[in-house]
Length: 377
Ligand SMILES: Cc1ncc(COP(=O)(O)O)c(C=O)c1O
Image (cartoon, rainbow, N blue to C red; front, top):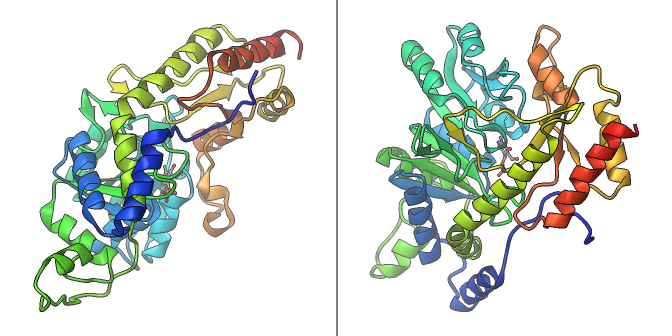
């Protein structure tokens, strides 16, 4: 049995060639490869525009800035998320207000969002946690009723579908992560996807110090093509080396999704009757991309979540705890916040290895080990 990786990028000769040829071309940032990657990414999402950034965090922060969200404003976000979803609200100077999750899907609970809306609420961050699309139609309905903006945190959700439509086509703006643990990766990176052309233009501007022209446009024009700086921006650029790798990853996205689905199907079949592992719940109208495979250790089981993690680790199986509860971390701790479903999910869930290169006998070993734990704990 080869050593099992918890997560691993799925790269081949194409990614190597793409990176090398970009290095050799001399255009390593702000060039044609980025433009092509953005175009393909938007098309795959069923949207008109995409703007590449250095990460999800920088991209999503730009969206909040462009919306003018700042001090005195509140943004509703589930606590059960990687803390980046919450940090961007704090970076914008606004206040995060934590929403509860649906305990079955681990996604934002629209009914609880309604309860968290107040006079200062400006926006909702709706997260497709672990690549499982959230109930975005209900979130939009709530947002419409209360005049709120919706940022879809699709960090993990490239290739996922909701009611037959790709994530990225469902909201005014969705932001994806291209970090190493994501289904499609450029090591680090983010992608803002939107049909809103003025927003796209603003994102391009803010990504690059507020500069009115891209480097590529400037160099393509006559020598007196001078840029202007109409507003204060940032340096949140993604490189063309990353974009070239991203283009190769786009070409194998369907294959990666298929291989992940195969692993998930084996886990689902193999664990269906497990005495203390509860499988992830997938509503009939969504198709996840299986960015992660998270399970729950049932209450009252013979082993605790941590004991399961330790036993699996002892058998050479790398595991991680489930998604964190952000409101329990020091910057966001508040005694008045009461989120029992969130706390239960954070305490009782763990993630099994999941990536396209996971081998059949490795999955077999993971399933046999879990089976064994059920019998000999
Ligand atoms: C739900 C969610 N939002 C945001 C992020 C942050 O993405 P990035 O690391 O690209 O900034 C992640 C990354 O794990 C995530 O899972």
